[in-house]
Length: 442
Image (tube, rainbow, N blue to C red; front, side, top):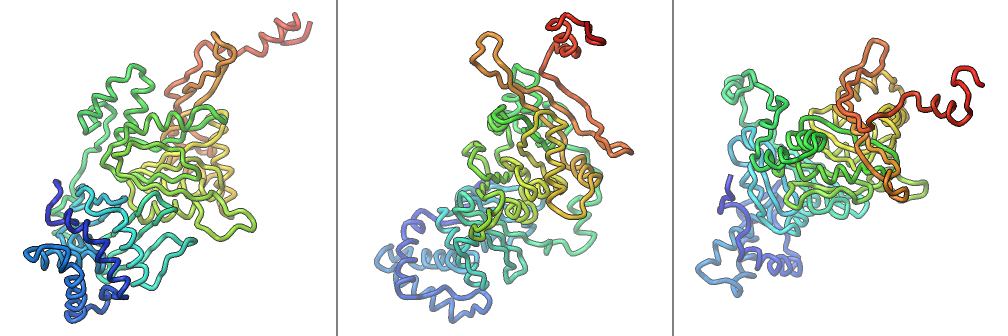
């Protein structure tokens, strides 16, 4: 959908808005509370805004600009018109960029206001609902007067203001409405396992142009969001480097949540993304702050991302929340330390088991199988041509298929990056070094 000129702030609105806000604050004039807004209170607020503008804008535009700014400074401001549109299910704000999901389709509206405007809106909603924000509490979860669910994150927890407004199916009243929008139709899966699955033709050409089959395959997974992926490997094996390279192949318009303890993930600037930075755990004696597992919980239950990217699983809470997120029908991506696919899965299991009493290994493995599709193992080795150089490479790609009756994983190895490895290496070394037979000494 093209940006509708009736939505958002005009250039003149953006220019005069800071002046209006400053004067309102100096005069201690507050916008009318949406819960008990009356025509009189709104008129008084309009008159105050108009009075501030009277020397700043032309008389021919005065009333029109004052009306827009009054709307922008009350309730959820410039987002209010979207709440009234037929079929709107979700409204997203990432920085100053706005999108809405309407009748199952994501429509991007562009930058409707500066990020600072949405930050002030979040604080206004917090004050109006009696849930003030503070440096230790930068998330807001409230219900709006119309029943919509309002979720927000503020800097420095997030890179920029993040808002999700969930509009609960008020336009779907009966089975006939659901039938009209195709609820009971059969659907063919969008992903069939070919390059044609990539809807964006430019992205399809970019993926198909990869000369390495391994690169082409992994880029296809990202471009189609065909599965959830864990990137595993030892320290400094290139896990994050590989993921950053693959992030160029994410569908640009899809809402993506990037959650990190340290800023490492590099997404394309045009990505429709929210980023949050939070500690994995609270250390003894530390002031109470929101942790990454709590942010994960808020994001996957309230922010409706198409994909969740967790920079690295390092704590029990993160492991459990990551598996829960990956089991909710959204794609999830992370990195974890492990010298083999099995070691990485065991680390994920151990962390998850220690996160909650009563969890069993079987339950955790069922979560792994349901939530994770691929494990991409990175490794490193001495460069055969330069002993001082280290090669970092994709050592294995494994598909997690299922678990058997004994509770063991059923896996399918799609690729191995170590060619010509001699399985009798250690026996060969015994014989070569000692001169003896590996089976029984000299």
